Length: 386
Image (cartoon, rainbow, N blue to C red):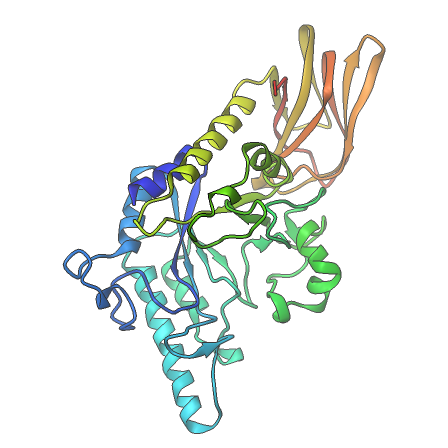
C-alpha cells in the first residue's frame, strides 16, 4: 500500500480516494455488515484490511484520505441502479435488507477508521425518499468535517461534465443548486447541452460547489479505470498530462487521475514512473516565479528590475472569502508600451494562463468588476522553458 500512496505523493497529488467497493459489491475491509468482504478471504491470516492499510499509508505520506463507496450496483445482491429486481413483498423485504446493510456499512467506514477528507458515492446515493438507504444522516453525524459527494440533497463538489480531465474556461466554483444528481437523476437544466452547467458553473450561484476534472491515467486512446494486461501504451504522455493540469487546476478545478494496481498488488512501474515525471514537471514549472505579489485591491503591479521574458501567469483568489472577481485584464509593459496579455472573467482558486514569450519590465492586473473587494492571494509571473 505504501507503494501506491508514495507514487501519488511523487505525482504531486494532495488527496487519495480508495474505491472500497464498486459494482460487484465486494468490500475491501473487514465488515460485520456483509459477508462479501475481506472477511471471506484468508489473506493475512484472515485479518487483511485494505481500507485500513490505505488510511495508514495516507497518514504516513501526509496525503488526505478519501473513500469511494459504491451503492448503486451490487452484483452479489442483485442490485441494479439502487433497486432489487422484482415486485411484491419479497422484493420489498430484500430492498429493506439491502438498505439497512448499506447503512451499517457506511457507519462502519465512518466510525472505525478515523476522519475522512472526502467520501465519494459515485453515481450518487439514493436516500429514503427514493427508496434507498439513509447514508447522508450517518455521514453528517460521524464525519462532520468531511466533503460529501453526493446525493440529491447535498453535493460539496461537482463532476466537471466529462472524463477528459479538463474543463473549459471560465469554470466557476459556484453553482445554482445544492446538489447535482447524475445521469437520468440530474435536473433537466443540469443535463442540458451535454452537462454544460456542470462544466462552467454559474458566477452568481448560491452554493460553492467546485468542479472536479477526472480522467484515467491510462486514457490515451483508451479509457481504463481498471487494470488490464498489456495496456501500458494507453498511459498519457507527459505533455498531455501537463496540458490536463493547465485545463483543470489552471481552470479553477481539481484534477482527479484514476490509477490502478496490477494483479501483483503493486502499481505498475510504467505508471509509477509517469506519475513521478508529472510531479517533477509541475514542480519545475511553478517553483520559481520571476516575481510575485498579493493584495486586496483592484490594481496590482509587478515591477521588474530589468526587462525579462515571461510566458505564464498564475492568479489565485483567497477562496475562503469567495469568488469575487468577475472581470479582469492582464497587461505587460513592453518597449511598445502596455500590451494586453489576457482579458478574463473567472479566477477562483487558481487561474493559469500560457502565452507566447514576451519581454516585459512590468506586469499589471486590473480588476474591472468584482463582487466586493478583490482578495488576490497570489499574482505570479513565470518564464517556463519547454
